[in-house]
Image 1 (cartoon, rainbow, N blue to C red):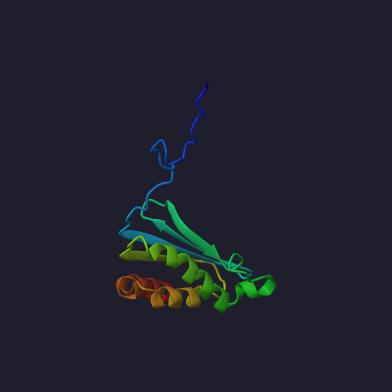
Image 2 (cartoon, rainbow, N blue to C red):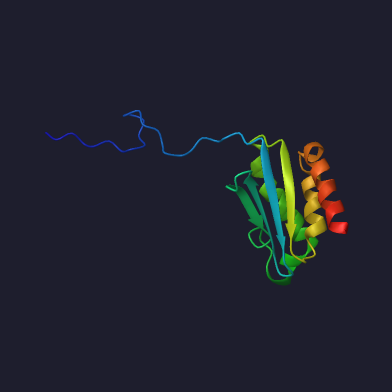
Length: 131
C-alpha cells in the first residue's frame, strides 16, 4: 500500500508554516503622504522596508471624506497599531503633500503609545516646516 503524503503544514511531520516571525524594530520612519483626496501613512524601518501602512480609503471612508482630518487620524492609528507590537522605540516623521490631514496625522502619532520617544523628532519636523 502507498502511504499518503502528509501536508506541508501538518503537525504530524513537524514542519511549521513558512511565515516569518515578528522582528523587533527599534527605529523606524513614518511617512505621511497627504493629498487633497486621500492620505496614505506608511511605517517603514530604517532601510525602507514597509512594516505597516494604512490610508483613509482602507479605513472605510469614501469620496470627499477621505481628505478630512478625522479620516487621516483614523488611518494613522491603524498604521501605528501594528508597530506597537514590534517594540518600535524611535520614529522619524516624514510629511509630504498639501493635504488637510498633515496636522491631524502628527497629532494622532503623538497620541499613540510612543508619544515620549517620537516627540523630539516631531518637534524638529514641525519647526522645519515653519521655516
